[in-house]
Structures are given as structure tokens and as C-alpha cells.
Length: 364
Image 1 (cartoon, rainbow, N blue to C red):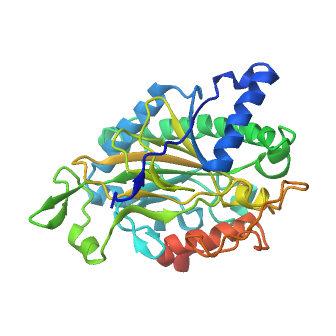
Image 2 (tube, rainbow, N blue to C red):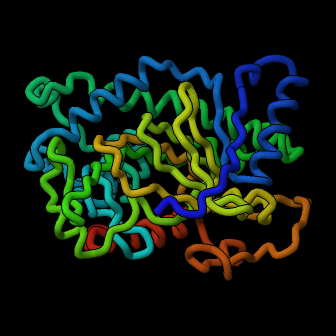
């Protein structure tokens, strides 16, 4: 599945000088403009997120996914109902109707039951499904909840800073997005584990060290070809940490290119709503993850920094116009995001409902 991969590379942008004088901020935003126009993807370094926090979350996540399946199922997504949080099994998530070879935890901003959005039964808002303190001790994952919430908070702050730079790159006020869409963003966080597949006498089987409990034969019958199939993200900005296994691929203007792990960086990409707001000037770029054949499991942490659920993203007034704004004929889902009418929440629910169709029918 790695044929026809270009040697082209994504840009690496050092944002360490972001909080310095405006001239340096403008230089950084110019790099972001070029990256968004040419790739829709870029790496960032100098982001200020402590490596110790990232390493701790990676270590605890690996321990969680190594637990027996019966334990992980205590936190299955069905139990969170409309909050859309919790664990899903390998093959439980679909992209374009096909199973992905990964398991994961769906998480987000922690909202108590008395929060107005939770009281109003707003989908995708509520409490996360965490092990209790006693369960963290029993399963040897002490600090898992606190580490996740700290990570979400720190990377959300980073998201606000990046959106300011993106606004500046478009010659807008730094607070353009926050004042309209992201002052109270919808934060969706995922911890994904991609079990390794090992070829054995022309048959695929899961790594013997993996305890997902999911039968690989069932997935092979469904002709699973990707860790995650081709897709774009839905919101404005995704901030991704990936471990050193690799597998991410991005569809640039010149074809598919690899986005390998680079120590000390995050991978950032723009989503459908930023594509919509910029009239296609900044495109949401298709990407996918290879089926993991490395011999060890792959961990990734995507945080989706999205517009407020009840906001109505619209095209920026006076934005530079481009030809062929409607790219639905070539998009992976053939959807015209520029003709959509409705709130971001409506757009998102339509999308996530296709990822977990059975769960959608039961809880949304």
C-alpha cells in the first residue's frame, strides 16, 4: 500500500518566537500561509508542550490498550450515550463504510452533568469515561485521567495560539476566529492504538503481544487495507502527536507523501470548516494511515480543535477568491462543503454518524 509515494516533504515551522515581537510573529504566519496553501499540513516545533507529559501519556496509553478486552469494554462508548466518549474495539470505527485497523478512546472537554450544554442534552458534550482511582491502581495506570486532562488543556491552549497565527496569515485580526467560532471551541481528543499485523504464510494475524481481543480473521474477511482510510478532518485545526512507528500519508498536489514522525514536533492540518471559511484558499487535505506491519503497535494522539458546536461557519468577507472553489468532484466524500447550510454541530453529527452508524442509531 506504499506504491507511488512522492519524496516531497511537509514544511517544519518553528513557532517558538510566536510570543515575541510582531515582526517575528508575521514571519511565522507567512510560513503557515505557504504551508496551508500548498499542503494543508505542516509540522510545528518550539510548541512548548513538555516532552515528559507526552511520554507519560504514551506510556499510560500503551498500558491501557494492553489490558484484557473485558476490562477495556467497561469503558465502551455505548455507556456514554450522547457524550460520544469511551472505548471502541479494533475495527469498530469506519471510514467511507470500511473498517479501520485500530482501537481507541474517544475523549473531550470534561463537562459535568450540570453544565448547560449537558443539561440540554447536546451531543458530543459531557463526562469522559475514566477508570476510577482504585481501578487506575488495579490496572497499573495511575494518573491516566489526570494526564489526559492535562494534555487536553495544554494542547487546547496551543490550538488557540495557532488559530491566531492562521488569522494573521490571512491578514485578519488575531482574534478573528476566537471572537466568532473558537472562544469556546469544541475539543475532541482521541487516543488511537494501531495493532501491528504480521504476515504469516500469506495470512495476516495480529501481533501476539496485542491483547485487543479482536479476531483478525473477521477484519481480514472485510478486506481491511488501512489503519485509517482516506478522509479529511471536519473542524478547523487538528494537532497530532504520533509515536515513532509512522504510517501517516498526506495527499499533496503532487500525489501521496509520507508524514513520518519527527522528534519534538506535532503534525497540524486544517479541516473542512477552515476550507469553508477561506473559500477553498486553505484546503482541507485528504490523509490516511497505512496498515501497521511494523511488528509493534502504533500510538497517536489527534486533538481536533473545532468551532463551537452551535456556531455557523461562513466564508470570510473579502477573502481572496480562487477558481474551482467547489472541489466536490475530486473530494473523497464528493461533498460540497461550501454549499452546506447549517451549524457546525449539524455538519459534525452527519459525519460522525457514519463512523459509528450503530451507535448513532442507538444514542443520537
